[in-house]
Image (tube, rainbow, N blue to C red; front, top):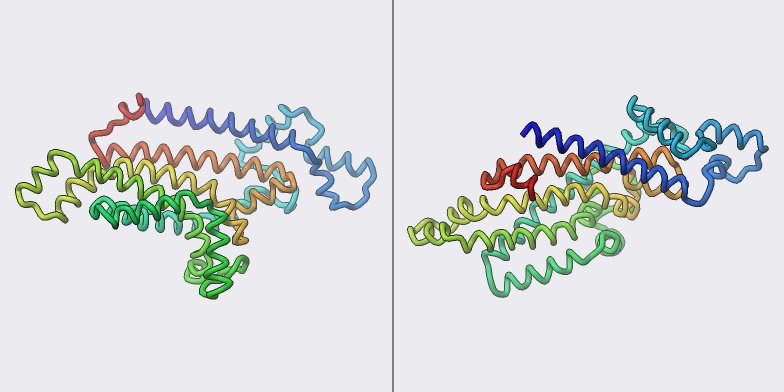
Length: 317
C-alpha cells in the first residue's frame, strides 16, 4: 500500500509538471498579444506597452517565464489575471462553489438514473431491455451542448418551467432550481454510458454459478440481486463512475458557457478567448490535479468494495 501510494503521488507530480509546461507553452505560442487586450484598443506609447510587458514578464524567455510561474505556484501565488485585474487564486475560489454544486448535482443524477436504468435493463430482458439500450445509445451519442440547447428550448423557452441562461441564484433552493437544466445537460451522456456499464456488469454476475445455486435454494430474487449480483457488480460500476466524475470537471466548460453559469469552466473559456495566461494555466493545473486525485481515490476504494481485486493486480494491469 505504501509503495503504491508513493508511486501514484510521484506520478501525479510528474503529470502535473508535464501538463503545466505543455499548457504554458501552448498558450504563449498561440497567436495574439495579451497587451492588446490590456489596452482595450486604446492607443498607447511604446513605453506604456513595454511597461505592461515587463509587469507580466512577457519579454522573458519561455522557460524563464515558466520557472517564475511555477515558483509562484509552489508558494500559493498563481499570478494576477490579465482580464479581471485581480489575484487568480481568489478569482478561482469565487467560482468554485458554482462548479462544485453543478458537478455534485450532475453526479447524483448520473448515479441514480444510470444505475437504475442498467438494473432495469439487466433484470427485464426483452422489450424493456431493448428500449433501455436504445435510449442509452441516444443519450451517450448526444453532446452536452446539444442537450443544453434542447433543454433550454423546451423547458425554458416553450414551457417556462425553468429559468434560462444567466441569473444569480441566492440560497440552496434557488441554486438547485437554476442549475437543474445545466445538471441534466451535463449528465445525459454520462448517465447513458453508466447505464450500459451497469447492465453489462449485472448480466455477467447473473450468469455466475453461485447465483444459480442461490436461486435453486429458494433465496428470494431481491436478496439474490442485492447480495450476490449488485454487490459483485459494483467494482466496474464504481471504476467507470469515478472516471466519469473526473470527466465532469472538463465537460463543465461547455455547459457553463451555454447556460451562462458563473463557474470555473466558463472562466476557462473566457480566459482562453482573451489569452489570460495566468488563469488558463491555473485552471488547467487544478483540473488535471483533481482528475488524477479522483482516479487515485477510485483505485483505493475498488478493492474495498470488491476484495477479489487488489491494488497489486490493478497496478500490474
